[in-house]
Amino acid sequence: MGRVKCGNVEYGRNETDESGVKPVSLGRVCVVMPTYNERENLEPTLSELFARNPGIDVLIVDDSSPDGTGHAADVISRVIAARTGVPGMRVLAKTNSPLSGAAPATGLECFVDEQGAPVFASSDASVSTEEVARAHRVNQCTNGSHLHVLHRKAKQGLGSAYVQGFSWALAHHYDVICEMDMDGSHRPADLRRILGELERHPEVDVVLGSRRVPGGRTEDWPWYRDAISRAGSLYSRVMLGLDIRDMTSGFRAYRASVLRRIDLSSIEANGYVFQIDMTRRVIEAGAIVKEVPITFPERTRGHSKMDGAIVREAMSRVTRWGLQRRFKRNKR
Image (cartoon, rainbow, N blue to C red; front, side, top):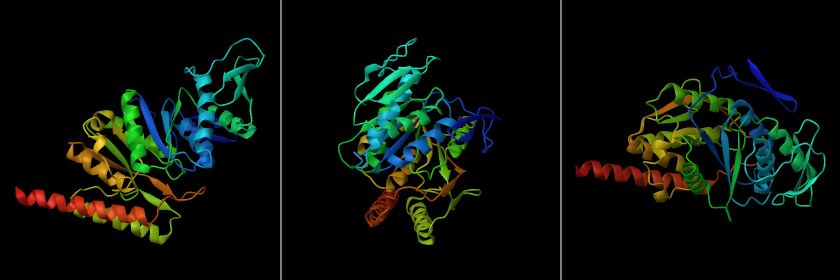
């Protein structure tokens, strides 16, 4: 099995990894990751994601995080851009002189080492030495991948972040567009399984990472959170008449072709009910949806965004959609 070392950790790459899934060739793949106060999760999540899934691109949609998530993501993006030759940072070969102003937007100075590889240092107070070191460590895990960052002016919610991310990815001609959390609850090894399922089944349009099918599970969840999740999925299935076990899964991959059949501008759901809304919309658009088992551990860093308002929005919208469905069916 091929291995790649990122810092002090080795991850499976190339042949197969712990999931038993071979690398995929689905065209261009973009993973959309909304963030709000996830700065401490950037390095561990991105490092493993890039290491296990070579060649994928990531789009971070940051809601002006007070902890500086967006700024830290910019630093990582610039360092990766220099290494992969993406326009946005200039690197001169065969010199050991500092290149002042090579990345003024992120306050980086670039040096080239004896092997011709770019090395970075902070050139102003806006970029800490630790941020540059973290960016270096993430960059060691990339293999033809790019990191892009969209900045939003305020906290506008999960649903609108995904809609904006989908629109960006479609405009940039990606073939597969994924949803994934930055908090570590979605395991990068499981993304290999999700993408592998999409590749093996050309007739499938959407693959959901499911906690509720055989082999799927949660880890270290409080009993009440698990109960709310199960009840929400059951209620949604009954009200909407959909045979999907994990309606609220936010770990999924769409073929771009199915997203183009949906009116993204009409989506109003903004909390976790956005996932239910997307599921019903793609099925109404004729998509074939398949669930594959994943392991969903409780986050170990940061805080969950789940609150009472999100639960109430989900109940209200699902009830309304269910009643509309029954009314339309009775009119026929």
